[in-house]
Length: 224
Image (tube, rainbow, N blue to C red):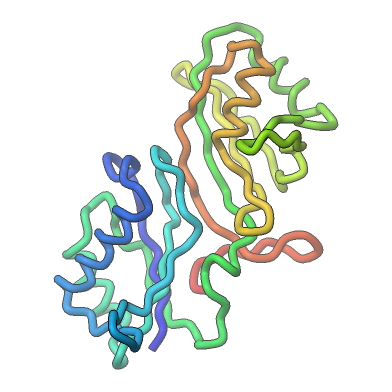
């Protein structure tokens, strides 16, 4: 039996690395006595795969992992016993059974949706964001020193206005091994273009992962 689990990563958990989150999940599965399958060989490992890694410091409403079980179990039972073993800020949002032919999580993810909030320290921000969003290119230099256009990675961009001194943005962008939008790149780019009126780094929340894109519609990952 192969299942897909969706969970949160909020509060103090945002400061955990991907490896820390993996260990937290594995410990919870063992305490819950979920009968997960193991690989063969001298060092058997749980047959589990994880979704797109989340930057340290970012929160998420849509973290995923796939797990193969040794025997069938009721999905609601799994959710109930596993929910008691994970931290409350890592609450289980859903569990689905998926077929063996469904692609692995990291191979299937093509886009992600983010909410980003950045502190405002200047005036006339609304006009700046309008001009910025209408620019043909959002040129930036990536971590390897290569000049790229960040706008090529964006599917949808919405400015949410300013609340409590924070400028809000909702962005759906390419994600995965082929093309990958980094929220930190956006935060740095808009800070530079605003000449510091919008500060970086920002507060980041990932809301959903998607498959599809390019010449087909984006499909939320929930349920596989």
